[in-house]
Image (cartoon, rainbow, N blue to C red):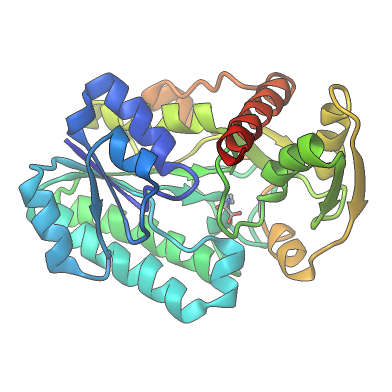
Length: 317
Ligand code: VAH
């Protein structure tokens, strides 16, 4: 039975849907601190949880006989810089509660890391699994801490801790406060207005991934026998692109104009991140094999966003 924290964020509900279709509706419990829309309550078990309330979390784990946790709750890169205190609480204290409970109850724990766990001194192209990590955001610092503490708990207490460094994830689910969010917004703008204001410079190359591959990576990592994993945290890569490149790809399908209105804060963050991740160990150890290229993803995303906006319009009418 799986518990997903931060399930109302960009990835949680898509992962819950995939896991429920594989393991059964009742075997995946979604939690979040926010009030869920009705459709979420109808799709499977949901519990209110504040990851700063350790005893409340423990009650849910015991009551639902949880044996593995996917911990998504975190403040992302840009929003973390706006509220460092809250980022420390959620990304560090919240993680302490989760990892301690997983140790006490011997639960398997997956926590996503990120390209944001690297910094300006890290080799950018390619960025290997094991390299210098001096991130310049509280988000990145908290994710390096998570990687190191997870590794320590594995070696010291035998905790089955697993992690993958996600690139910017592209999905028809709104992300919250990231530096790669322009790559989601561009699809909504292409469908709704035909014009996109991009907050990054046109030549800012970043590793990205379509959500279907991201969700598969979590399922594959969690299903992999522990003895086949040779490390706790793995880079995973699909493709990298610049704003100019994705604009050109979208323009093959729909009219789109773009204006570069650079957000200095997010440009500064993006300039410290890798351009291309090297992920040979994930491919070797647990069969990582992304299915979506940039060229394959763009028409999928346009279709998904179009039908999502249409169904929202129908509900409004
Ligand atoms: C962010 N989307 O931009 C997240 C992610 C790789 C970036 O961690 O902060």
